[in-house]
Image 1 (cartoon, one colour):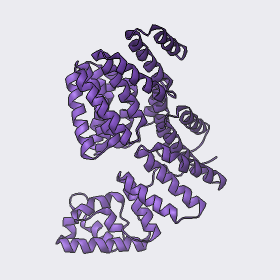
Image 2 (cartoon, rainbow, N blue to C red):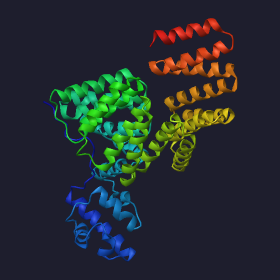
Image 3 (cartoon, rainbow, N blue to C red):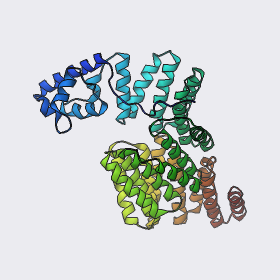
Image 4 (cartoon, rainbow, N blue to C red):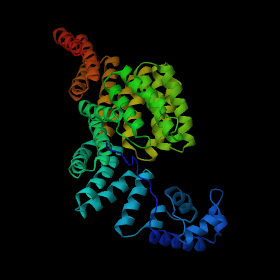
Length: 431
């Protein structure tokens, strides 16, 4: 039976030569900064530990490097920078672990260009796919993910196949291929239940992924069932992962119409994620909570959360989140009766989505703008937006039904009753 040996890279320098070189750099930087070993250790480490690092006797972890580097006036990457391939991989993994997806992707891509051994190429491709998915560039991720799965299978590396399949499913999901993503994830869950041994939180990650797929497909009961199973296995998760699980549960409860549950889980998730200093996840969740408060009728609180989320998204240049928050703000403006502002914000979301190659964001904003046009009485503009949205939702049955019904209403308002009836019938036939 295959065994998954890891689910996330852990950046630990395990070569004595590398540890000694890094220790020398730490000492050099410390002396230049005029710090004692005790001062550098601060309240997190000890003088003895710093001494062991400087002499290459201890192996610095990513956490230690991230803590010490700013105190030394440098970066973690600078402390380990080297042209040696082993060091290059460590630097790339460190960039990924710290959330610098683009820097990590660039490094993995460079290494792939000079690597010929098939297994090593597959390892790099899996890392690249994770970065691409984190950057919401799903189309680019599908090919390397598929190649990694094929390479691991051909090489008999059964333990590595599940992780490659997991990221392939993630790419398929982001690319709106729900059927493909569901097939991969449900297959993996079935193999785990049949005895495939996995380490860490990989089983929970599979269950959460399955829940996200079912939420997008409109199967809310199945989604919540997966999440409850995941929560039953979450006792050993760290604070950050517990927060991430609760955040997913908030999304699923909102989609299922349980707004109180969404708000409760969302507030609990934010509390945990702030303790874990997972700022990016907090910003995403603020937008999710804004939508829950909006659906619950608390427009003022929704506007406050969306405003904060957009400011933070703009400060870090996150086009994906900026697009979604702009759409949330458009929905808030529409609920407040300001249709002109809603159309303006939805148009901003569409433009940002197109810049970021974000098909999901563009679709959502098109629907919001169409509703705003309809609310303003411009049913011709609404019908145009609904028509484009319907084409974009062809692989999302639940979303397409929603669009067809609203489109039919706009056509009926324009006096096009025959076409409106046909669309309403299509929506019912696909229920």
